[in-house]
Length: 298
Image (cartoon, rainbow, N blue to C red; front, side):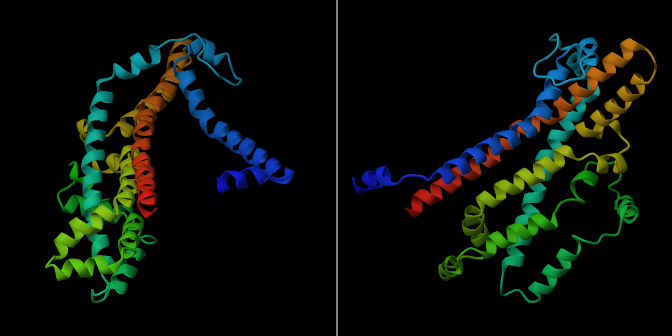
């Protein structure tokens, strides 16, 4: 009752109201700026190419709804092969990334490890300096990984940045939990699986997002290390389609140029839409987990 009376008596000043209105307007403007380019691509991909080429202005809806561009894109069998390869690389690569990152972070978060600080500095050194592309290519070739799926999965098994994030998250856990577990006879594997991993699930969800998006958008490693077209990810296939459509647009044939222009927008949607849908799931998990932690503390 007192809280309701207090809320009724508190009045917001005109400056606060103006500030809130400015914030709302600014955020709406930023949202439009961020969303409109993708909305334009979606509308353009469903528009008739002849109408689209003659419409240079802002686009809010498809011009003559058609799915011809998508039919031409999905009629290419390499698109489906690329989808299957990309899904495999995302799932397998993210699992490898999580396992190696969690194990490395647990090791670096131990305070009783000799030379722990030196090892951490050496690992962080790799964030700023590397041997370059040619030594990496020679290593892949000499290890027998060239033109295999392992050439895509193993070189990026650990991200130093994500490793530091996970290490910081584990180091922030109360040491009394680990001490209590050791008194009960728990070993390192039990502490890792029963204490560290459950308490760092929100951080792991963020790393799943980082690693998953990275694998989905990756194409350069496949271009360098793969010769077999049946192992190429979706992004590399779409890159080749875009290059081909750009070549068609310069042939001088008006019909060919129109088709090539529509295919460009369709391929962007095909490559981007799935990862945007999956993007919300780890974020939703983090929000739910944080909300539960707040309720449990109260």
